[in-house]
Length: 226
Image 1: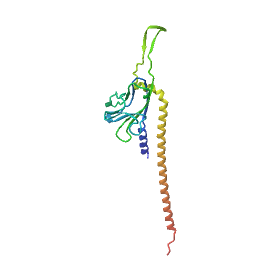
Image 2: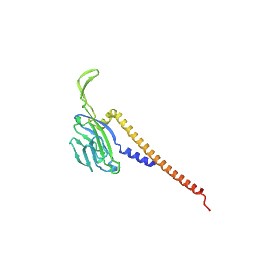
Image 3: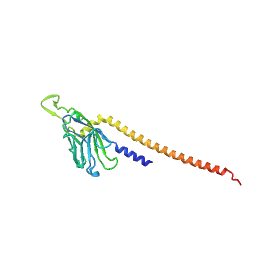
Image 4: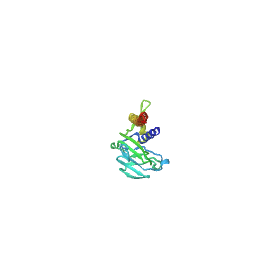
């Protein structure tokens, strides 16, 4: 019974997709991360869709690939700029627009039951930061101004994830708690079912044993006529 419980736990944890958040800027490129291990599995089929990853395939597929070759692309703004042969299937959206905001799902079709890798990414679109002119040096205005801009590449997935951690921290915490709660209650239900079935079979065996003993006692107590 313990081994069966571990089996169900492994299934529940494996089928649960990972979640992350990325912030992109209007008019700039933004990259949604997704990777898998090609050394263990080789080059696999995958897809990207709008919305969370469903039980199979992708919802509202916008890009898909089979054996390393893209066979569906809904828009030329959806690009794979990473090394696909190394497992980097991150989706880059060119010239991000307000309508691009939302949840995107990445699925990698790994052979076997419940083996697919699934990742949901919530994309938030914001106004691009404006360039600021800093010319105040030593408390006085300097005639030669120095322009400061963001040094990181806009749409960098690492930057997006770091900036979005605070914004989505509460959301991810609630999702993880719900996932662990589902695993816990599923395990409790499985254990209770096994306990109930065990007691039921045990009670049935005891009742049959008592009936057999009673029948033997009755047979032995009946006098045999001479």
